Image 1 (cartoon, rainbow, N blue to C red):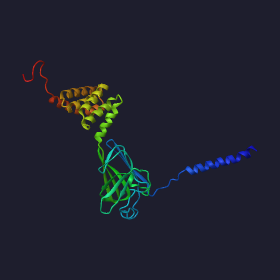
Image 2: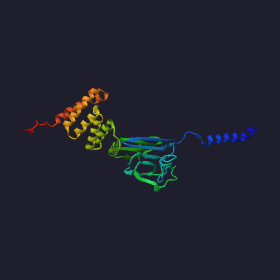
Image 3: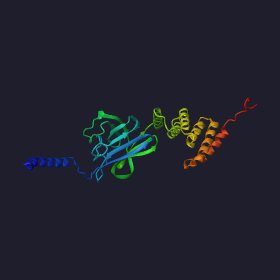
Image 4: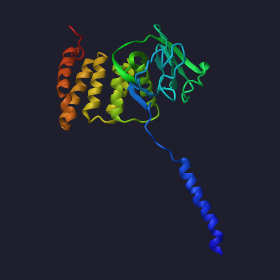
Length: 304
């Protein structure tokens, strides 16, 4: 009797388990237009593009598969998206950090309209709304040096402050410049990093060099270098960092003294790191010693 009463419940449980497994399982098959992507770190800015990559497959692309004068998702399936971790200039227009759908309006023999749209998760172009565009820029296409069967977006590094987003498909390419104020962003990161923590000598020393060479802030560089020495004055690198800051400020006597301290600490360490810098330290010390103004004897004026 008990087993008969339980049997329907067991069958129901088995059915629900079967239904749940087969409802949530996903069938994975090869896609004719697979998702592809490209990532790049430009200075302190992370760039990423993600797109569906259709093939030419013997078809007329421009003015055919991709009509002129109509909004295009810049790829296949879900709209192509582009993300920036900091504020950037996109084709000359300022864009805040974020993730955006990339749309285009191709035109025959004319500049194309390229738009960044805030609805980054949309499918195709049917739900596109122009009022959600963040920026629109005009970019002229050009003939590519080679044929490319599948659509591709590539992020190309130029330097710490600039990169290109390049579309290449069939015999056409479109290049959109992207840039960021990497020196300013880097200095903002430095100040934020040390604002609420005691710090460690190594990031202090590295930040001092960045502030000196990229941030154009000698006073802040000196503060950071002195802090690095206070945190670990027995290592050659904080001393070497402080020497370089003094030299940049024209304080050659102090620079030579710190270079000598860097030599002494380095020789005591005898590390590969120091050995890789030893020749430069010796050369700069000699240079700065020669530039240092002699100190007149006590109680006497120079030249008397």
